Each structure stands twice: as C-alpha cells, then as structure tokens.
Length: 533
Image (cartoon, rainbow, N blue to C red; front, side):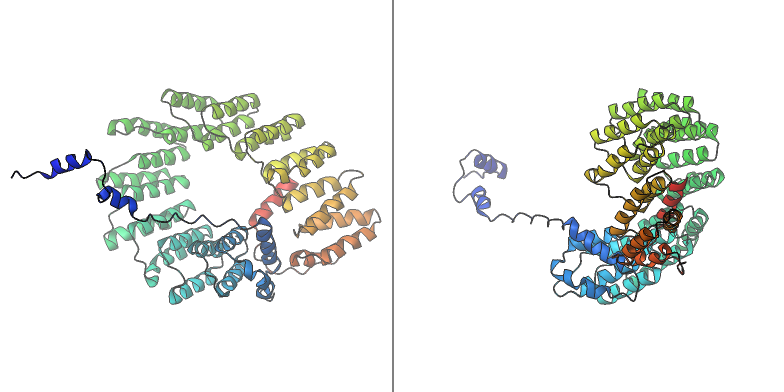
C-alpha cells in the first residue's frame, strides 16, 4: 500500500467539503474570547470641576480636606481620580492628600496611571520630600510596580527645578527600589539634564559611566549630548563629543549629524554647518526635513528671510515638508519685518502642504494685527481659526480683548467674552485682569469693571493684588465706599480661601504675606507682566 505524503493529505483535505468532525468544524465550535469590555465613561466635567475646586480651596495643611471629600466617596472611579489629578497639576500638597484619601476608600484601588500622574505632580510642584516618602511607602507596601518610567519622571522634575545633582542621585537610588538601571535609563537621565541645559553635569555622568563602569555608548547617547551642547550654543563641546563618536567607530546616524548641525548654527557658525551638511551625502546619509529646518531657524533668527526662503524652495524640490514649528518661525519673522501679506501666503502654503496651523501660528499674525489696531483683520482671523477647528488660547483672547477695549469697542469685547464658552475656553486670572484693568481706565466703565471683578470672585479665582488695589483706589476716588464694602463682603464669602484672605486688601488693610503659597504659578506672574505691558 502506497504511503500518502503529508502534503497530499493536506491537498486532499482542502478539496473536500468540511465534515462535522473536521478541524475546521472543531475550531468553529470552540467558544470565542469575549470582546473586551468597553472603556468606562468619562466622569462628568461638573464633578471634576467641583472636586478640583475643593482641592484648590483646601491648600492649607490645617484644612479638613478629607472630611469635605467624604461626600464624593460613592462617585469614585479610576478615571475620575486621573482627571482630577490632571486638572490639579499645580496643587502638589492637596493633590497628594486627595490621592491618599481615595486609596483609603473601601473597595477602591487607583490605577497605575494615577500613581504616575501623582509622582509627576509632586515633582513639578517641587514637593520632593513628599515624593520620596510616597515612593518608599509604595515600595514597602507594594501599592504599585515602581518601574523605570517613574524614575524618568523624577529625573525630569529635578532637572526642571535646576537640581541636576539630585537627578543624578535619583538615578543612583534606582537599585534601592529593585530597579536595575539600564542604558535606556541613562539616556533618559542625560536627556533630562541636557534638555534643561545642565550639559556639564550630563557630560560628567557620561564620562564616569564610560570610565568607571565600562559603559559602551550608543549613537543615541552621543546624539543626546551633542544636542545638549547645541542648546547651550557650545559648538566646541558638540564637536568634541561628535569626534569621540567617530574615534570609537560608533555608527554615526542622521540624528547625530542633525544635532551637530544644530550646535554649529546656534553658535553662529552657519558656514561650518553647511560644510558639514555637504559631507552627509558622502557618508551615505540623506538629509531629512529637520536637517533643512535647522538652517531655516538660523536664518530666521538672523532676520534673513531671503535665505530662509531659498532653503524652503530647496526642500520643495526634494518634496520635504517642514513641520508646523518651522513654519511658525518663518511666519513670526515675516510679521516682525511687517511682511504681513507674505505671512498670510505662508499660512496658505502650510494648509496646502498638509502642515495644519496651530494656535501659535495664528497668534503670531494676531499680535501684528493687535499692535497695528487692525480690528477687522483680527476678528476675521479668529473666524478663520473657527473654520479650521483651531481653538484660540489665553494669549489670543488677551491680545484681542486688550485691543478692543483700548480703541473703545466695548460691544465687540463683550461679544468676544460671551463667545469664549462656545470655544471651550474658560477665562483665568490674566484674562479677567485684561478686562478689569482696561475698563477701569475708561471713562464711565467703572461699574462694568466691578461686574467682571465680581464674576472672577464668584468663580473662585484669586485676583492679583494690583487689581484689587487699582479697583479700590478708583472706587474710593469716586466716593463709592459702599461698592468697596459690597465687593469686600463678596470676597469674604468666597469658596476660595485665597480670595477670602485678599478681602482685607479690598478694605484697605495690608495683608500679611509669608512665603509664596504653594500652587501659585510662575505662569500667572508671567501673564500678569504680559497684561500690563
């Protein structure tokens, strides 16, 4: 009897109709895996806002935050915790208390993502003692798995806080938490340090890793350091690292070449960068869009629009499209040189080539219109943003509102204000300040300024001290002490403890100020300066 081969059996089987006992029938009757459960619905925005307000109003360690939060226990979910933490990213201490309270609620366990968010919050608010205490307890009681990404967050936080030695110490402490540092972890440490211009410390770590631990750097590691020296505009330091890369026969990739081009251009040696650019082809590397963009940025910084256009034309020949950041740099330079029509042509080109303009793109053009009191073109630009689904931000609104009030178009300013919520923008202290300060300076608009001040207090937003002082002085000057009493009373009844504390300033008494309160943002100070300029 002939032995039939396996392949002939397969062919025969493929040409036969399926039988009930065939494999095909067998697999079709196996139970399928159940479909994955649908993602949980997002928490109601009103609930997120409400809990966020509670945290903002209980910044003092003596406040009984946990008792106030008790009412929200039945509504807890992992998604809710994450959304509240993201909203309260500048409230390190209250956010920490909120998270610990949530962990103690019976039957509830926060997600691992929420642990990472809290680590980032504590780091960004410089609550490093709380951060380490939290990690130590999490490690002892196994709350969640402490992996390398947690330490990457810590590296970034210390680097942003200008504490590079602490970032390096955090790297050395990884083993205490059962995490063995890898090459990726070292790259993350170097990148965090270089990103905040702590390049000398990064170089020391790099050299120590090579000489003491036998670390063999990769092209990525070298590129990080070259880019770091570029950030501090030190071409010699970048060139030294690049040459060492070549000496070690490390494969030089496009990332490393681009980093060196960037270093040379930022240090002012554009000619040297162009020579290096020409050498790239000799080693088999094809320049990408970023390679060309480096020169565009260099020319724009030197206000040499003509040369930037030449590079842009060359990119078109090679069918390379600049990213939005590069286009924004060109448009900002054109507006600076008052070539507004060319800026609009560049805006149209962006759309045609698939680089969608962002808010920064429009704000560069908007700044020109506002500086030149071109109201219609400014409002038309906002309409264009609406059509392209690009939402205005606080800078957009602050510029336009300031312009409308300055030229006396109060009706348009009111219309703009009332349309904010439709664009999902909710004014913060700086935008309220633009309205109040602008209206106080206009004849017959003091009452309207007070109305906006009341709205701000009702929203629980603490005003700037200069705003309180200006409004009070103007009211006292017009003999309206009764209005001062009304505003002060409203502040005393506010849900925000910070607003309540400032009520004494409205009554004309100096408030005792200790150290800067936790949660007050550097951003607000910047906006305050922006508002008065």
